[in-house]
Every structure is written in structure tokens, then in C-alpha cells.
Length: 118
Length: 375
Image (cartoon, rainbow over all chains, first blue to last red; front, side, top):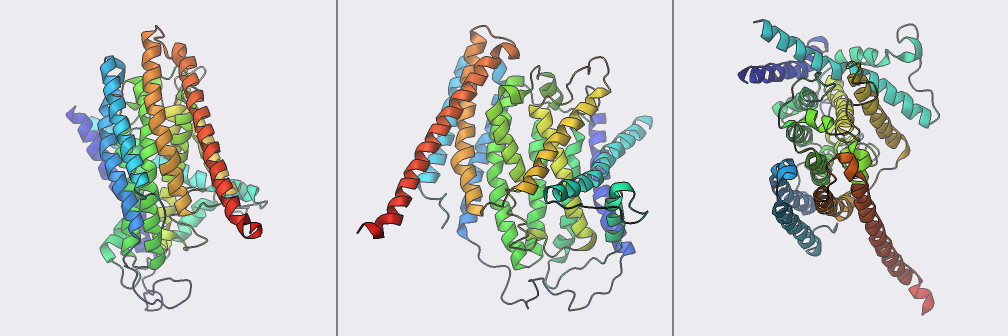
């Protein structure tokens, strides 16, 4: 078993090498002549004004928040799905209740108006 | 020592496959898109690029390596430079568990599919890193959209993923393939469709291409990237497309199973790659033929259709499968008609609800439109 972990470790290490190699190679081969014009932010030719790190629309945040609810609860469904074939009938009933709770969460979010783009 | 050498060799093979396939697939994609748009696409440019310009991507790679790495003014330097490396790493990590054949697999952990689910969102991390660190308005916009879209589509993807796991009783990808006496797409057509659409959104292919909508926000989260750093994003995108297609083929199209694979095990990878390539071609056809949807339409489609549908599918299939099993249909083939009937039922009900909702919306819209004339 520990040998398998050794394989994973080697694989991850080589992934890091493969991910960094093209960038390092480009850094070695490419020219390095930065100038202020070149380093301006790209805004389709216009001069940049204002700041880019602005307060963003709360809508995006609400979707991410709704995801957290679903994400956490769906992780709990994974072991149930893997054991489903060997479980007695009441496990199916309980999972149905759990899924209905999830659905209730969705309905709540929907009725609350979070899914309406403003 | 010898085992470690073998590990290194195996890892190298596993890592060279995605790179090589991406080089080929970029050429394929450009050619397919060009044909859809009535162009020639990459064409033989002298003796360098070879017949039909099959070495065009290689030439592009060489060219892009000799370009300057420009870090824009005001960018967060460390995060900006780390993002392209993270995106390539995230794209490569999945290849550890893809089952190419009965014994041909980097590794078959018991939680194989969970590993895939955990690894793929790292692409999203790199998008956030890239978009936030570039300090560019287009990049920020692209990042907001990417987060909202990809995070949302993970839910129906995950929920429809649970159904093959339920029918298999294991999280191991090898067992998932072995359990498919019938490809799961034939038994579970609606979950397969949901998974496919969610997967299209996850890899950011049209019609769900809001993160890098090039017609409106230049290139979304990687607007500021040029040279090999842009190349890293481009490469990772194609590796992701292909690995997602291979995972779809593994989960729903029977993986390496196919005719004569029992006699000649070497046919396994051929079948898998063929299926994965067909799925990839469908993605490319979407790319060539679909318009881009607006971000709120994309999110509505997910939260108001795909997610409820996936939840309903999960409950219905859990019950139908269990009842059919208790009635004596122990093999998958015996349960297939029941499961198909359940799919059909849910499909018809969904269609009815959609039709009803659509009619209501149209009636309200027409009433609004003709109101001034009626008075």
C-alpha cells in the first residue's frame, strides 16, 4: 500500500515538473525587454482608468453561497450511493427524505428570489 | 529501486499522452471549426508544417516558447506567474486514474471517481488566480462569471454522477467500467445528457463560454496573458476537454469495453480513445455551431432545470431500481426496461412542465405587447 503512495508522490512531482517546464523554457528562450507601454493593462487600446478590483455584483456571491449548501450535502450522498446496492429499503427511504430536504433548499432559494438576475 | 524506476516510467507515459494528444487535438479542432465555417483551416505552409499542416501546432509551440513573458503593471506577480502552472497541473492530475484497459491504468484507487471530482475544480482555482491577479477589468468580469458558472454546474454534474455509482456499488473507475454490461447511457439517457451538458459548462465550451467570452471581454480571465503563459491556458483547455470526454466515455459509454476486447485486451485503449474522441468531436461541433448564451440564461438553465431534474432523476431511479431488484431483476440487463421506463416518465413530465411554463410566459408576454393596441 505504501508503494502506491510512492507512485502517487512521484506522479505529483512529475506533474509539477511538466507544468513548470514550458514556462521555465519560455523564460530562458524569450527576450526580456519590458517597457512601460508594454506593461500597461490591456483594455482594447484605451488608457486604463479607475481600478479593476471593484465591488462586484452580489449576485455572483449568492450563487456561490447556494453552491456551498449543495456541495456539502452532496458529499454526504457519495457514500450512500456507493453502498446503495447493499443497503436495506429504509436506507432508500432515508435518502429520499434527505434529497427532498435538498430540494426544499433549492425551492427556498428560488422563492427567496436569489435565482433572479437583477 | 527497480520499482521506483518503473513508477517514474509509468508517470512519464501518463504525462506524455495528454501533451501529445493535445497537440493533435488542437489541430483537429482547428480543422473541424474551419470546415464548419467553410474555410480551409491550417493548411500546408511550406515543407515545414507537413501534409495538411499536421505539424502546425508543433511550429506554434516552438514559436510561442520564444516570446517574452510580460507581467502587466500592477499585477500580483507571484499569483500571476503561478496561475498558468496550476492550470496545467490540474489538467494533468486527472490522467492518473483514467482506465485505458482492464489492467492499463495509472492507478485504480477505491475512490477513483471521487478523486476526479476533487481534482477537476483546481482549474477553477487557477482561473480565479489568473483573473484576480491581472488587475484588469475584463479579467475580473471573466472570473466572476467563471466562478458563478462552473460552481453552479458542478451540482447537476455531481448528482447525475451518483447514478452510475449506485448501479455499480463502487467508486472505483475500473469497477464502473466492469459493471457496464450495457453502457449506462442506454440505461440512463437523461442523467447522461445532464452530465454531458454540465461537463460542457465545466470545460467552458460553447454554448457555455461565458468565462472567456472573446467577443465581449477579450479573453476573460486570461486577457493579460501572452506568450507561453497563454499557451499554458490553451493547452490545459484542450487537455481538459479530452480528459472530460474520456471520463464521460468511462462513466456512460462503457469505457474500454467493446467487441472482441476479451480476446485481445490491447483493443481496450482503442475503444476508449475512439469513444472519447467522438465525445470530443461533439464538443467541437457545439463550438462551431452554437451561439453564446447570456450568463443569467446559463445560470437559470442550471438552477431551474438541470438541478431539479437531476434531483428528481436520483429519487426516481433509486426507487425504481430497488423495486425492480426486489421483484427479481438482479442483472442490469433485466432492470434496463424498468430504468428506461423511469427515464421516459421523468422526461415526459419535465417536457409537460416546460411546455406549461412556456405557454404561461408567452401568454403574459403577448398580453403586455398588445395591451396598448387594445385600449
